[in-house]
Image (cartoon, rainbow, N blue to C red; front, side):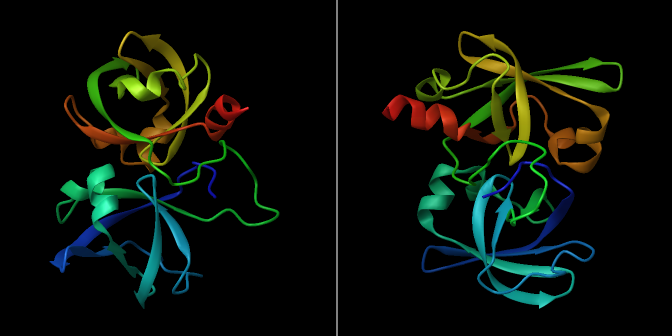
Length: 193
């Protein structure tokens, strides 16, 4: 479980495929500090397991076909910047909302408006998710906890402050970019009641 508060990003250093499993190596300064094999890390909104701590700056993960089909990680390229968050631990601050790292669907950026140093991003969401995205509700985009600032027929908007743009990969998104979406788990569970 995660908070959606991103404090670090990493670059894809290599990506190789063997027997339909993608081996992905990510690196960033002190990325692996405190990490162990078997730890779960939120990588661009996807819960992945560390399979190797290469060194203090480098981690290796494996992605199965299901992950590649259901997330944006299937279209990874070397050099791409990914959001990273370690698992929530007892006593940690919960600054965002509970994020599970289970992608519910892939959305598409359809518009980005500048408002001073901030941005308003409109996302087209899969139809099946729209009912779970309320105005002023929480949503995770590429693992980042955000508040829905407007609703539209086929999607929603979020507002991005300069800090979020600086510490995440959301500043790299353009019209047409695909993003991992995770609805607030409360919305998911309320429907089952």
